[in-house]
Amino acid sequence: MDNPLDLDATISRRDLLLVGAASAAAVKIPPANAAVPAPTPDLPTSLAKVSLNVNGQAHELALDTRTTLLDALREHLLLTGTKKGCDHGQCGACTVIVDGRRINACLTLAVMHPGAQVTTIEGLGNPRKLHPMQAAFVKHDGYQCGYCTPGQICSAVAVLDEIKRGVPSHVSADLTARPLLSAEELRERMSGNICRCGAYSNIIDAITEVAGGAA
Image (tube, rainbow, N blue to C red; front, side, top):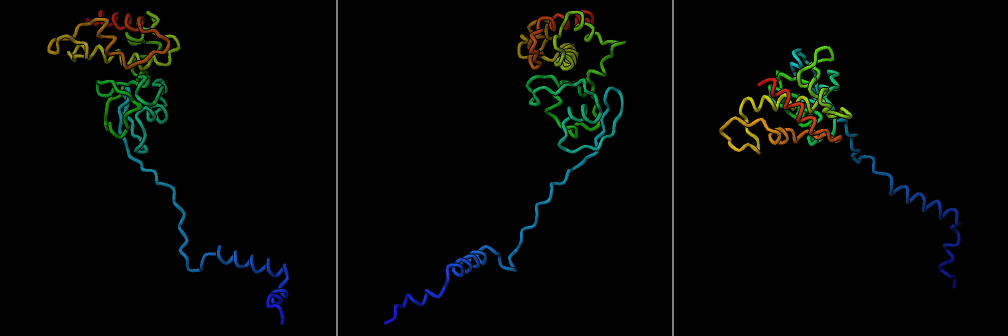
């Protein structure tokens, strides 16, 4: 009796490999009517027109709605005096004055301030005509590396305005009375502006001098 396995002997090893390869290819090739996923398009950039009055000059900008006020000032208006430090609102290097109030420019979007009056360090004074606060910082050596100085000065100017308007702080003893112009008040109000060089005592001296002259 013939061995039934002898029937497979007619298939060569080469033929067996070709059949196996064809079977594997047939499994991997998708059917002709299979849906092919479309490529994901790039997300469109949303632009918005923003009107800002910066240092007394009107500007019309077309900005990505995600643009921070800090980047609008630095990258679009080339006002690089305002510094980008931590970019998390913790160091105060980006402090500017918006409609009379100091804010961290890295934490707010430009589109949130249509028509706002923005003052940066360039708008306070220049080397030929320094703002009194700038001159006091120079006199009292209120800086070393100088990186945080623009934010320190803008914040200091706003601090004196806060005290003048009677805005209390966390250390004000009487919330209904005009805050005292003391080192404790100034340190508390300037605590959001970090000086890694440690020129704090000189900064307080500079602000105190300007406050005395403005009194």
